[in-house]
Amino acid sequence: KHKILELDIERLLKAVVSQDIIFIVQNAFVVDTSDLQTELDRTKERFENCIIKKENEYAKLWNDWYKKCEECKFDKILYDKAYNDMQRQIERLQAQLGDLKGKSKDTSRVSDILNPVSQLLKNENVELEFQVLNYAKENVHLRNTYKNMFDSISLTRTQTNTIIASLQNKLQNTIYENAKLRAQLFKKVSGQKDNKRRLSTNTKFAKQSILGKPPKLDEIHALSKP
Image (cartoon, rainbow, N blue to C red; front, side):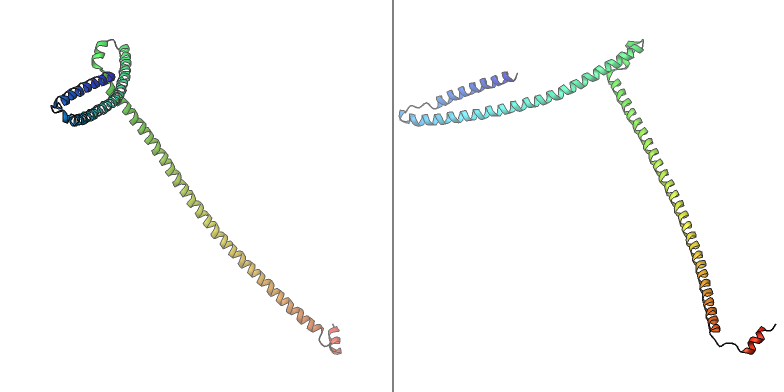
């Protein structure tokens, strides 16, 4: 079809150019031969302008035709896609109708009631319901997951607070026990220092008594008497 259209355009273009040439030659006819060269130049110029004009018109027709072909190609792609989609839908509907015919005895009634459009809408509704069911299941799963996480976090927080309170109590008890031990140790050390100080004083007095004046003879006799 494209080749035929192109040949028709060329044929019409040649016919138009031929008519324009005849018109130019008729109008360019002159009686005075002295002006023949001038008229010939003018005729040549008009002829060239006519050719340029027709070439531009042909280029425009060619561009329009090429654009139309591209649009037809694009439309054909869309048509093929729509046709293939419709063909698949028809095959699917025929298969479903065949299943229904196999399950039902009244095939004519089934064919009249379950037409392709209603069956297609039914399939879309089933698909939507299936998606909604999946979304609901996923929502329940996510809700349970978040609840378990929240419960786990709450339990962990409670256990952590309990452990911290227990550790604080142990720390307070340890501080109290350490204070008691330090007080007892201080008391014991102080007592040992006092005992050592008294012992040192007694030892000093004993040394002074030993190194002092000897007792008199009468005192010795007095001490020796029973």
